[in-house]
Length: 442
Image (cartoon, rainbow, N blue to C red; front, side, top):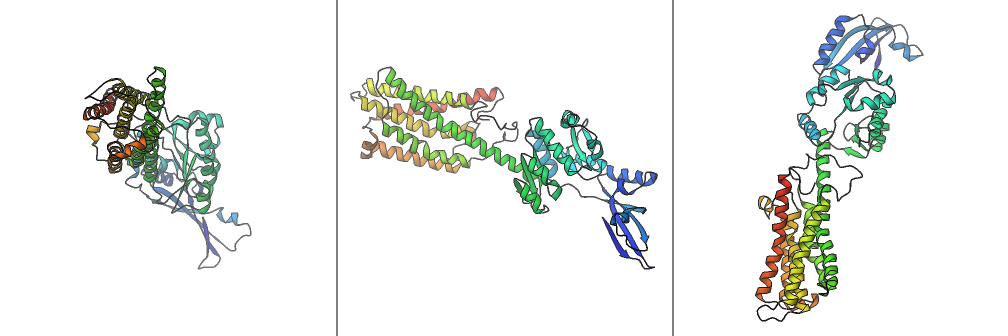
C-alpha cells in the first residue's frame, strides 16, 4: 500500500508498506536476518520504504519503483486461547487442519507449530513454489502440506480442488473478496461474519458470527449429535416396526392366527413408541462424539452396526411377543380360558410395554444403569405419559377401542416380565460390544 503526501521542502513524499520480500533488496542481509528472527517468533513483518518526487506521475505504478528501504515492523496477532484446543479436538475427530495465509512462510510455520497445525515432517509451501507445481505434483503432496504462505486466489482454488480430487470433503474459511472462488468451490464454504466482506458471505454456505475457529469445531460436534440422534430414532422405531411385520407373518405361517389387530398395531406405532421418540431429538452428545471418524457422504444410515442392532432388538421383540401370544392363546391361567382375544391382548401388552421401555436402550451407547433414567427429562416424562396412556387403555372400558380383553393379575405379571427382557438382551449386547472396543450406535 502506498500513500503520497506533500513534502515540507517541496514535491511529494511517497511512503510504501508491504511484504518484506517485495520491498527489501536481497543485499540487505542484516534486515533479512532480523526479519527471519521476527518471523520465527510468529511476528507478522511489514517493510517500509520511501522516496521524494517532484511531481506525481500519470502512471501510478511508477510510484513504487526506486524507493529507499526505511525499516521493518514486527507485529504479533496471537491465536485465541481456545484455538489450540479446537485444533486438537478437530484432529481427534479425523479432521485435517490446513493453514492458508498471506503471511511469510516462516511466520506461518511458527504460528502453525504453536497451534499444532504444522507437525514434524509436514511441508510449508509458498505461492511461488505452488505456482511451479503441476496439478499432479500438488495432488501427490497435498496430504503432507499443512501450511501455505503468500498464496493467490487462484492458488486457494487449486488447493481446494486438489483435496476434493483425493475424495475428501473440504471446508474452507475466508473473509476477503479474493476468497470467494475457493469458498464457492469448497464443499462447505465458511465466511467470517465480523471481518468478512459481503462477497465472501454471499459465496459461502455458512457465516461464522464470531469469527472463531473453535465455533466451527463446536458446529461439527453439534452436527454429529444431530446425525447420531437420527440414527438412534431409526434404530428405536424400526426395531418395533420390523418386529410387528414379522410377528404377524410368523403367526399366520405357523397357523396361530394374527397376533395383533389393526388398531393395536396403530396404537403401538403412534402412542406406545411414537410419544417417547420425540425425546431423542433432545439427547445430548456422548463422550465418543468427537472421537469417531468423519461420516462419508455416501455412508448409509444403517452402517456402523445399526442394522445389526435393529436385528437384535427386533428378534427379541418377536420372541417375547410370540411367547406372550402363545400363553394367552393356548395356556389356561387362573381359570381364564385361552382364546384368540386373550392371546392378542397379551401380545399387545408385551410389545407396547417393551417398545416403550426400549427408548432408554436407544438413547445412549452406555448402560442405562450408568446414564440413569432421568438424565434426559424429555424422554423420561414422555415415557411416563406413554405408559400411563397404555395402562388407561388396557385397564378401563377404553380397552374395547383397541380390541383388548380383561387380563388376570398373572397375565399382567407375565407380560411385564416378558417386556423387561428387552433390557436384559440389550444390556448384554452393549456389554460385549464395549468389551470389543466398539460403540453401540456409531
